[in-house]
Amino acid sequence: MSSPRADPDDLDDAELIARSVTRPDWFSAIFDRHAAHIHRYLVRRIGPTAAEDALGEAFLVAFRKRAGYDTERRDARPWLYGIATNLVAQRRREEAKELKLREALGPPSHQEGHAERVAEQVTAEAMGKLLDSALAELADGDRDALTLFAGEGLSYEEVASALGIPIGTVRSRLNRARRKVREALGRPDTTTSKEISTHG
Image (cartoon, rainbow, N blue to C red; front, top):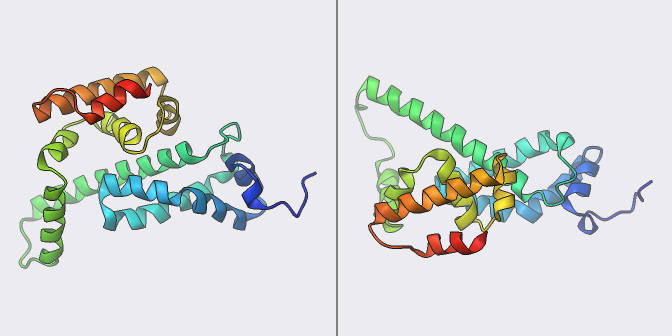
């Protein structure tokens, strides 16, 4: 039987999540360990403003699902990336529905939040129109794999774990994403493609 004096800092993620089922407050250590990485990923995917809300939502989902966590996975980060990726996909579906509704209703009579939209547009342009456009053209699954791999530094195995797909599918998605981004940018292999070729 484990000692009641065990310190959360002395446990790996799997042990910590397992014990948090009966000691819910211990799950906060999972947040402390991984929130910065998940937040950075969400900022890359949906921007800093939306990332704040999505981060809290991701860890709330994780907390609710903690009893079913696979304790063979000693590092919880791929699991958390998977949850965050699902939230991004859900958010994009909701935005698409909202956009269709707005188009059906026509333009609003007044433009609320115009300054915020302008600021967001300028920020997006500063990040590079070409790269943004290239990434936007990727299929969702290819974009997910590329962002986790090149942006977050996950291994092929960790990407597969995060997305719940075979490692062969990860390789296919990364190769396809690399080719499409390179073609869209109209240049030979970039840093991203070099990373992909040396990461596996």
